[in-house]
Length: 146
Image (cartoon, rainbow, N blue to C red; front, side, top):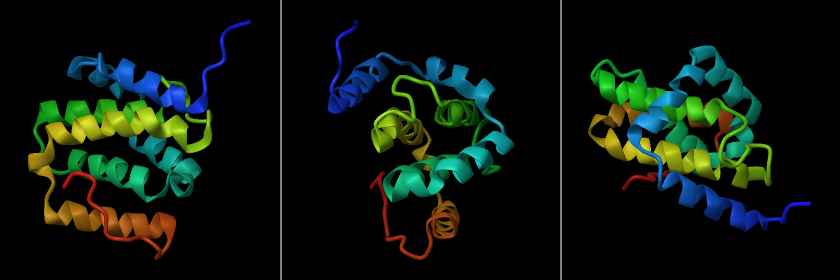
């Protein structure tokens, strides 16, 4: 039988693996993205994600849908959101509760850092509105990229 890895160790493994990933690697996950699959994933896990994970996921989506976002940037975001949609990635989403989304958070945060010039006040407002819709009115002011 294989060696058991502590739950926090899984997050460290994801960090080490993701350190090796390049933009073109993230873009490959784009084939898993569609509007319908994104909505389905949010319906299934939106409330579970909480603010800290949901915020950058939604921000990535709204930057993606912005008409001013360039094609190459959209490809990166489609890949990052496709990675989020997949249940089996470096750290499977069902594994260890929210820790299973740690790698998804790292991938979307990496992508957002590359497209941060596209994040407008209008996008921030859309994200806040959608978070209130998904999580209820308990949403606080958050900015993970500040």
